[in-house]
Length: 238
Image 1 (tube, rainbow, N blue to C red):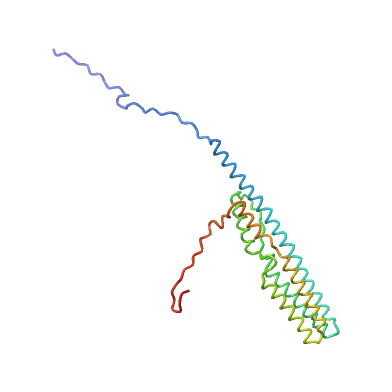
Image 2 (tube, rainbow, N blue to C red):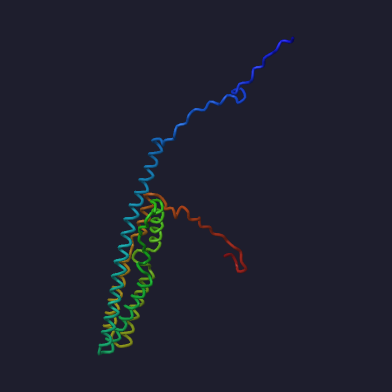
């Protein structure tokens, strides 16, 4: 008889193979550097927001008081001067009062057409994140600065002079009372200048200070660069 050879069946670990050594992983915990960076970023946002909220509140409060005061002043002036003109006996006095009433009415229209010179406040939106509020506050600050012309634009002073000068000429030349016409025109010009010199002036200075302390606003960083190009046309370049 031939010798019988026993064949040993393969082990399971030989068929599958040895499992690779896998070291257990530990949960990633932010290190002290990452924590400090996160805290610094949060503090920067808080500091920016504190600055913006304070300055925008001041701008809006000034605009609201200024606008409401002058609107009420011109509104009352239009009513009072109209009533006086109706009761006036002398033609020159009546003409002067009518001119004053017209100028006051023009002031009312002017202030109604441009409420608070476009100066906006920073409203509270429930559920808004700090980052979103910061971006919105920066945008409002820039828009307020663009709407601000400290002490009024130069042409506003010329318009004020022209309107009151025309009123003085109407009363003086038209009704032979230069004293009353010039006095009324001078008072009207002075009042107009006071309204121009007291209008909101803070926003552009606040924007300059903000950008010097914290850098450009997000709106300014995202604004595309201005490019000038020359396009040939029939009449020349444009």
